[in-house]
Amino acid sequence: MTNSIYTAPPSVAETVLPLFGWQQPALSIEQFGSGLINSTWKITAVTGEEFILQKLNMQVFTDPGSIAANIQQIAAYLQQHAPGYLFAAPVEALNGTTLVNIEETGCFRMFPFIKGSVTKDVVATAAEAYEAALQFGKFTHLLSGFDAAQLYITIPSFHDLSLRYRQFLQALQNGNTARIAEVKEQIEQVEQRVSIVQQFEAIRSNPGCKLRVTHHDTKISNVLFDEQGKGLCVIDLDTVMPGYFISDVGDMMRTYLSPVSEEESDYSKIVIRTDIFEAIVHGYFEQMKTDLSAEEIKLFVYAGKFMIYMQAIRFLTDYINDDVYYGARYPKHNLVRAGNQLVLLQQLLQHEKALHHIVEKVCS
Ligand code: GN1
Ligand code: MG
Image (cartoon, rainbow, N blue to C red; front, side, top):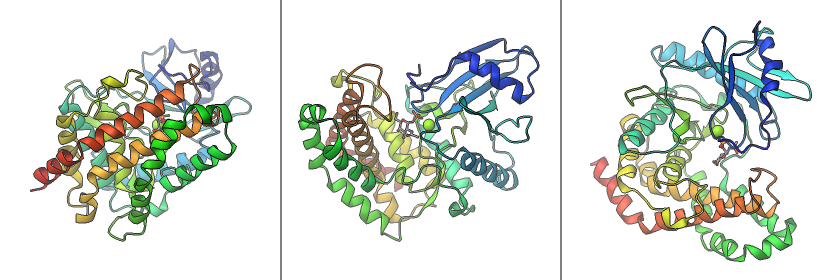
């Protein structure tokens, strides 16, 4: 369930629905999904039709119009070049746009709920990981002829690890001093692994590493499945921007490899499932193998280090900054999340060699 400190009560939805032409109140409004940033509801109309309503977090997405414009460009490209691809386009409001901005309430948009589609919160099987990786690979692959530079940057420097590291150092200067003293050990662990930032810098200046249309939030709940478990498409396109493949592959590794999520406080449950890793490699390569350069393929395992390390830094920085970004449902929430990611990183590093062998095996 969402913890979101930004969650608005369903009555807000009732103010919004008339702006989308609804003449009768919804039959039901339920909170939906587990995102940390936006608020999401599933809404059933009196006709029985179902929709997803979302309130955008405008502290994070300061220019929602840029998201709508990106979605529109992508939808138009896919309609022309991949007409069979299922694309969950947003619904038009009465004012002709896909976003309604209600002063002092927020910015809302709506999507039709795709009938028969199923979402998952955790990766239970290798088959699910394969399907999801194939869908994220397919998304980037289908858009390989689209000029990524045309996309608006919806969150500047979103996956810029060097910037995240600088923000962490800044928090050590200006953050909550009691918390800084409390997390000394975690700070040391982050500092010890700074070579992950240096490797990112090398990637940025390597012409063999290409900027492509990248999803930037490849958790399993952003894939729609059919009732037989086949992947249908990806959703949540708010952070689709030019990026490196390590963002998408890395976030799959971060969120699929362990059977428990970043919320788990019993760190002994954090383990690396190598069969799930192999499935990610198979699924992603199914679509992307010929798009990636030999240099990029060598970075497949680094992708996981990159994303897990960045998420550990982001949670730890937020803890030091009194939880201003992610919010917290209990006092040490972001510290628990940061510690979880640091353990996950340690586990990944222990499996590094074995994971490289899997990539080589799948490639040959
Ligand atoms: C946020 O809102 P959600 O859960 O989809 C965050 C991601 C993090 C994730 C960690 C815009 O995503 O980058 O990986 O939390 N999105 C933004 O759970 O900051
Ligand atoms: Mg998201």
